[in-house]
Image (cartoon, rainbow, N blue to C red; front, side, top):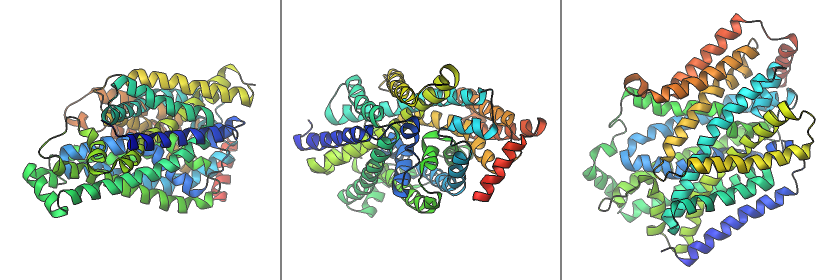
Length: 486
């Protein structure tokens, strides 16, 4: 039974997140404010909100669960993600910040694609917005599942009731405050997440008698848990490392690059963001590893609840409340960003582009807000199966964005000759490859679908761009303007 101090601490956190949403409601007057915060984020908020929106519930549930099942071999995902995050900050962040502003002040990824290639047909915007809505629905659903598991495990709620409780809070502050509310709540949530992933494994390892004793217990339980190569294959290792490719195409992460106030702050933001990520990722792996030792005599029924179980058995109720809030923070920090990007796709890339070209800013903001509710309800319906795996849902959506958008973003920033047809071919072939590959299992098809999707997308961009007319002189001049700004 949940204690009163834990419940009080948890409620205080939820009220605080809603208060932030209400505060920023007064500062949101147009669509740019709602979906990009007026490009006014500082380096610390940019870094931690990007990290928190990236890492979602899978960092505190999925990855510790994987480590609890397989031991150190799960670290390959963490290694791949750490490398990918660094490369994304190093090569994409600054260029995208300049390019998105110079190219007609683009405020969404579909907006950037359309303006970058001067696509007057709107097809590039619509196709990319459709991809966003498709994969973000699955991605948001994974967060709903994680939230349901949290409330079910920690507070004894029925699974479906738990889903609705978590969703109502997230929808509320995203609906009200838009990008600024999402970014500032993500900043606070990022701090809480890091705190949990440092404190919990240290406390758990200390409780079993220290590092040496933990290693001995794990070795006695399953010696393979100590071997990073145990149970792996070349395809398995490549698949895990390939998670890093996904960073280049995640709309909820790269929009943070577009929103930073000053491009010169990006090196500072990169240092903060990558440090946070490395500590968080390996904290998650060690949490799962410690779980093997601590719960050796009473194995957990659901590996993805290992961190939640630690909060309840290792800490006093007040600290447990803070740590449970950190788990919810991980879940909320990603869903809110996903809902926001999805709602901007509906408002800016469907409603305004196709139906109401002269729609007012106030009208678009409210279309965005209504879209938050609709998309969240669809994600909730998909999440109704309590046996859903957080990591499986995340991996599918992560691959979809990484393969469909990643190469398009990178190549559009570095290759002058890329044209609209190449971008369109890349997005379509990348997305289709992920969907088809995921259905084919066995042998080579066990390779994580982001790898073939990324390769096919890249080839399509180069081949189609070279086989069709070069971009207009206006597009090439703009590319040169960005090069000079850098």
